[in-house]
Length: 376
Image (cartoon, rainbow, N blue to C red; front, top):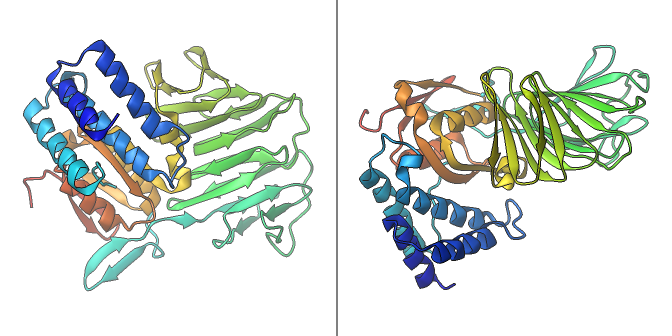
């Protein structure tokens, strides 16, 4: 479809006059543009196009998203996005931590926070700790633990038993990647903790996770088990993302390829690609999702597609190592549609989200304050 056809169908969708056939055509276009062979972040523009489409969809069915929002308010934001699409060749809103001196910067009395980076600590079986090289980004587990380029992690590492448990820990503002002894690749997000053996000698390949990680599990006759405080995830070979921070009331498992079985206190669930399982304090829920959004973080992008401001700021807090304070609790429920590179400073991220009219932000030492847009 050409641009005029697309915009015509979006207008019909907004007005709720679109036919089933036209809706299917628009949905087919949307999926093709947004996700066919999409790779983060080189095809970032495709993700932004997807955000526009979702925004248009929401203007037609606003009651499904937020009953207290007026159609006029959302349509004004959607119209602004359309103008960007027509005159700038793209359509999107940009939006887009334990405080450390490394990320806190003050220039001319203006406080800002730099983005996180490759920061992690390796904890050995005997309890000794090794701060990993920030110029490196990944570890390789074999007969010994090295960086991916083959260089030594430390001049001397105490010998561990093959079944000995090692730990990879990322702080707030850090991330790291590791290839386990079976070939499984794990990307560890900020403020996360991974426990794993030097070698998988048992009948099952079992690791433990606190926080968030993306897994590309190597095919093996031994089941691969991921244990969190709320889930036990079992696979043979697949690609999936797990987010399970102990301080959050929600844990999610998102599947990209293969299949996984998730055991919780509420029962067993079998996930298929393009679905996520959400575990809360009251039960579980299965959702059909655009799974690549869940792993954009490992490729340098924040992708927020119909995410609450509370959820957005939770991710900002971890990546920039700064606390968040909401002056008005109702702001937490505001919905955010945005894509931004994680390499930007926090002031850039906050300026972008403020420009969408959702909220105002003030950056102080150790804290970001979120206030109503009308308040200065």
